[in-house]
Length: 184
Image 1: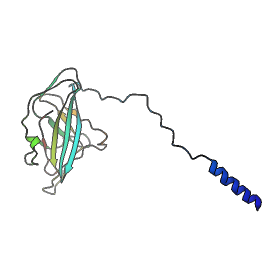
Image 2: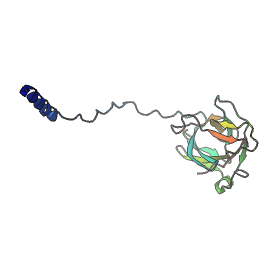
Image 3: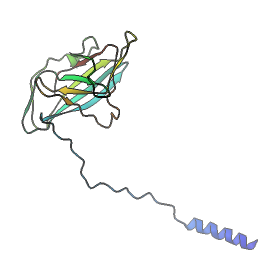
Image 4: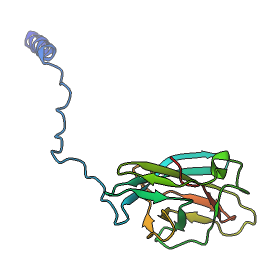
């Protein structure tokens, strides 16, 4: 019995002397720098900006960055195509401004010519309302492609980590999307 008591005390003392495990060692970091997106032949890269949603109204910002070597001129509105999950173009009416969708002053600003120097960014926004007016099939886009200016090539809008499953442009049955003019 004394022997058991002695072994129990010894085990207790050893347990108290054993240091607690420390924090795990830091994970190895990659020595490779982050990969910069490539610059399209157009000299500008389109990406998603801020996203806002309230009461069925949705607004997503678009950013156009001059990643080329020459100034890039804009005047007006981006041309948009809403694409489905397989990249197919959806039947969506794209209008300049937000009339009939919502009253948003920034969407009604008259476009002005802009020149983006290398590294400069212009913005535009798209707006829609998730409204079901007929109970019919609803249009849901997963991304958009744009032609930044008239006559320019179409290019996809780059999505970031906020959108692992796409943009989810849930247009309801209205099939209408509004776009603002390019601005700084």
